[in-house]
Length: 497
Image 1 (cartoon, helix red, strand yellow):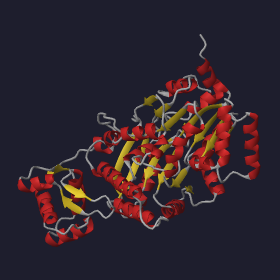
Image 2 (spheres, helix red, strand yellow):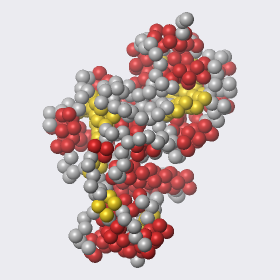
Image 3 (cartoon, one colour):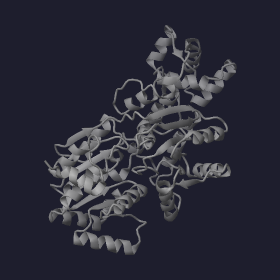
Image 4 (cartoon, helix red, strand yellow):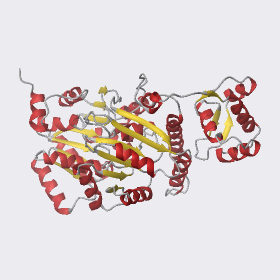
């Protein structure tokens, strides 16, 4: 017997079978049912809303947070002969007129919009008209974790997407994300007002990725060059700031590597050129901020290298997941410094101080606190002794066995008892003045200058919940009740430093 969905899949995309989790979401949308789809990076989320538009010969409107993501998906669809378009500030007037003509004639199948465009009257009228005339097949909210303050990439504009239900009653809505912990999924369901939805959550585990995390030396260039030498296919290098992106591209170019840059400060034409180069060159090396790559579909990325501590475990799962989409082994390397979390924390505080409001709102302060907690979780994974993959997956509520592939699983660690040093450290905090980490370490070195691992031990004891660290970015320290219990009756603390 013929299978209409398989036939449509093969005709439009050349594939003969669905990936795990795709078909239930597609069938639910075609039956008019809301969906929440959490599928891993490389799991084919986009097909879940693209195929229904083609089967029904109607319009699917996709809300997407990044210009690069929209441009990439539209380009790939157009290359397949599928009528797709996006509207953002970089679209020229003649292109806008063509898109409006396609919308009016019913020729367009997929339209990508940034969330802020829904605040405009023209976009709202377009949605209302298409819904009323029955031409709107579905609404898709991509990167739906952005709606949640608990998510790793919160976007205030996503908060207003709940209005889609009122604008388009009866039109099924699908929310999609690569990584969403249980409380983030609950936020998505509530804030988007999903009605009796199908909830499709697939494992985020990627059996071909090899995670390595290690301290960044003063001069990381030799390690970066060695990683590039060992890599296959395309390489994606992430740096935290635009300045760092430019700096590293120049360093690599001076070593004879044709590295190119991508960040939001570049002109649109240069960003489009970088995207085309990354997608079409044989073995490109792209240095970018983390804004690059969401939804960008290149299957042979053999190395994803972070030059700083990632901001969140969930975000790192998504960023590292851009490697090895072809199923072949791929490397995911993080070079981090203990100072990364401090600099990231201060950057968050500075962003808050630059806001237009004379006084930070409670929501702003709460987001800073959440960001600090997420940074601490990422630091615990980077400095901890557990399997990297196991710890990362636990951050999204998935319990797995050790992977056997990461640097921690392959290492022969020799732990030693740090309880004496821990007791000395906790006593200084207990008699202290609410110092931050930097002041505390200076005091400890005055007392015992032979120990150069105080900062590392402070962070481990925070992770052990013996010490409380403030979430305001200042990193003030105080003892928890468990820390006081340890001082009264110490127990062994075995770590592999």
